Length: 199
Image (cartoon, rainbow, N blue to C red):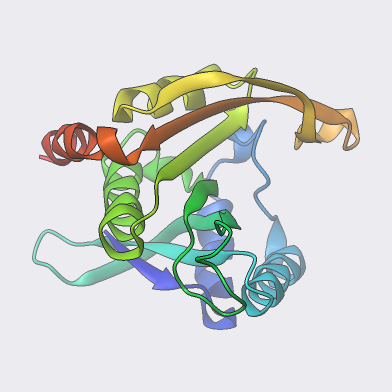
């Protein structure tokens, strides 16, 4: 799979990806339709301009190594800079979170999410030199929690009433967030695990 910096050019393909089967999007914010997807991409691009996120579209690579269809989105978020190292515009944060991830129904339970985590964690640890990569989810999302644990992230605890819930019937109430992370000392073992999972 490939990660492409998000742009408005991705909107139509992302709409198709998000329209396959929406029943699994109980805990995730996955825009529906062209207007909502355009607003979603626009918000992420404005946050990128402000240095708050680094969003990507996720694209399949075919068996013969050609670019395939777009299958979802993911991003670096919560970029944090330690005192004395970070400065405005510094591209190298000390800590990041990987989140805002969603995949088309047909791409779920495939190697795509694992490949994306491998690419992103490699960027974070080996290029930026971060000390910690967090991966968080709604504490009730058992499928997401199993996937996070499978990649080798360590459960650190649950933050109560932490972020807005994406469960539509809850009207934006605050959810509990399960926090997992990989720290730099754990990265070599996690990298080996991810590489083996990708196969």
